[in-house]
Length: 98
Image (tube, rainbow, N blue to C red; front, side):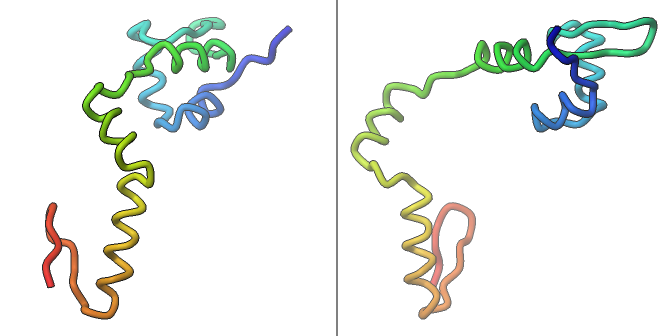
């Protein structure tokens, strides 16, 4: 028999607060098992399937952008930050100021 996860264990796997997981279970938004009146348990395999079912594909335009810029935005941000160390520029909203 597969081990059932506690609310704390399941919340850690999902990266959410225990309170949120209790709410989702009470709203039947997430697969769970109710043991008695208050005890709630989860199967890791079912949580993984639940997560996978909620995957959102990137838009075609963004996918094309990623194909044209394989290094990704994080790489660009790191390069800009490295260049700015000497000039003491700083990020301000979506633009860089010197």
